[in-house]
Length: 464
Ligand code: C2O
Ligand code: CU
Image (tube, rainbow, N blue to C red; front, side):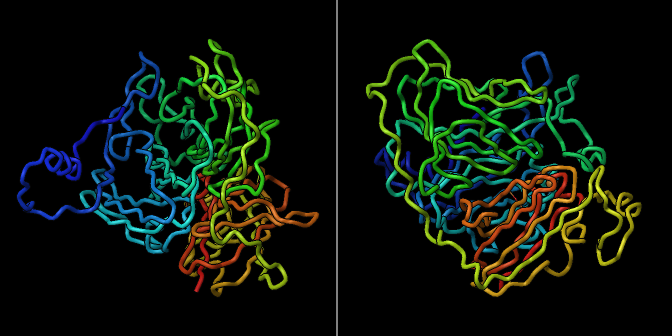
């Protein structure tokens, strides 16, 4: 699915390598381009029609962007779509002006327009990038890719595999994305679930491995609604990072791994399946049975035999525990959805009743507010510790994501959970999260079930 393009840079390098004299280019070379385009792909099995996708650089998922920790990422977005777009760099503790949220941190880039993204990468780990203009449609159509930031000293592994999981709701007759993208029935329930599930753009993803090989698996949930329940077969491993941030100790994988939309899990796994067998990443399906999410046929043995448990990844900067003694408490009740009790809420400056909200395609509220308000949900002074008490008064799970800063769960019995940027909130299970508001700017807090985000579950905070 990769289209080869000779970029200006590789072209110049080729000429220079050939030892020829190079004339000064007429036009100074700009930053490397990441384009958004309409691309026809075969997502469905042969026999079904092709899918018109929206892609980065003609690929679904977009190209894996990979850079060393501490480096600066520079990309020029060239928008070749018929609609405006923008790119959000999910999980990066980023300069606010580069966060990519249309209508909050930048204007959407019109068709034919461009925007230069340039920002530092303070943290190593597994991140991703995706559209943040009408994202419930644009991410669904394919605008997402992995962003990998490498540690200065990589862990002792034989290889590194990025696995971006997603699902697509396709019309079985035509192979096209099922329209509309804003179906009220899906919006007021769990969101848009696909009828075809895949890894790295393939429903039958497979990568050959060797017995005893040690692999870093970087799992990214790029689906817009589906929570993946995952299990390993023929692989034993450890969780070493969540949402990019290293765990203090690798945690052996024993049961099911839960990967909510937008979350990442970094695993280090050893291939224990024998030569000729197939190791499998399994997912629990809608009918409760386990199905293959990715196949790893074992085609030989690696030179090394089994190794001891891996050591922890080096911590990222700024992973200190928040100081709860001085925390400012914010209440974040979530309401609405089918079987929920949303009677009225604030929407675009007015108090609206349930019927009026539904007429406007709005079904969910965060702290009594539906959708983005003019003013932030909270204005925080830089350096303050914030504790957000999330109560889920709905009948659905929600994957709540904070831009610009990672947070930790404050555990009920005391102590903190790992640092994350997206947390799964379950009905009737209150969550208490805390973070240090150390990144100035306007930051979204929203559900990453993107249909929920588009129908009410989006708000923002300001750090000044
Ligand atoms: Cu990954 Cu506001 O999103
Ligand atoms: Cu939600």
